[in-house]
Image 1 (tube, rainbow, N blue to C red):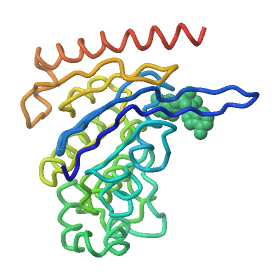
Image 2: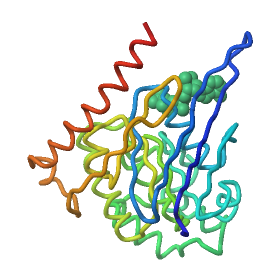
Image 3: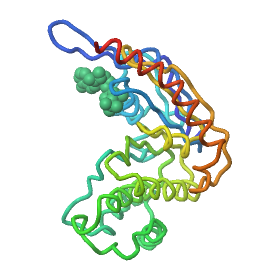
Image 4: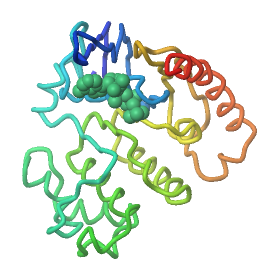
Amino acid sequence: MSGEIRVTGVRRVYEIGAGGSLTALDDVDLTVETGTFVSVIGPSGCGKSTLLRAVAGLETPDAGQITVGGLTPERAAADKMLGLVPQTPALLPWLSVLKNVSLPKKVNRRKGRTTADMVDLLSKAGLGDVMHKLPSQISGGMQQRAAIVRAFGLHPDVLLMDEPFSALDEFTREALQEQLLDLWDELKATVLFITHSVSEAVRLSDRIVVMAPRPGRITDVIDIDLPRPRGQALLKTPEFHAYEDLVRDRLRGAFHYANAIAS
Ligand SMILES: Nc1ncnc2c1ncn2[C@@H]1O[C@H](COP(=O)(O)OP(=O)(O)OP(=O)(O)O)[C@@H](O)[C@H]1O
């Protein structure tokens, strides 16, 4: 139960001026079981970030219920059960990489790791040689890796990731996917991951949730039954491509709909 995310009948409506409203989430039901990796994919505006923010306790649904480990998201966040990795790494520019990733330890001594643990995690993430540098002295890919290590530093039960690799080139992205999977395998957390990339979703996930917009809703849930660990070689197998095709087919419907309402 400790890391289960349960979303039941969630609705979120935004007022958009002149008496208009936009239903960003409509009757969304989703259970992410403890320790599983679930990705959410769908066209722009289908409510992915709204859903993630609601699970993080940063957004209050107008109807329905969300629990994280049986608690309200606000309580789970206060208990440091949640880790959040945003699209941009948001490291503090005046602190070294090591000091940045060690911050949660200082903020929350109860659950945080020791500095030695963080040094070890940074080394595992390939950042051992740059841990004393400032964020501006390392690449964007390294900065994002540091942000992921920082999130794991709190030893969260649940990790919420909003397109963390979207600003990176394809090869860096693939390398980071592998490192994320290694960290996840070692540290165990329930992960809710937003992406626009079909191959990324297939590689990382136990389950992929497909959403469509207006109203933002879940249109499909696809279990990914591929063996782990999912190294580079897996990306070339027919089984992997078959899952990519399946997800693309299911997504196509959501995109047709999105384009129809936009035109
Ligand atoms: N604070 C807000 N006020 C009004 N409308 C909002 C607000 N936040 C989001 N929206 C609208 O709600 C819908 C869902 O937004 P959301 O950011 O969750 O979509 P998304 O699927 O994450 O999109 P993207 O892939 O582009 O990040 C969009 O139409 C967006 O414009």
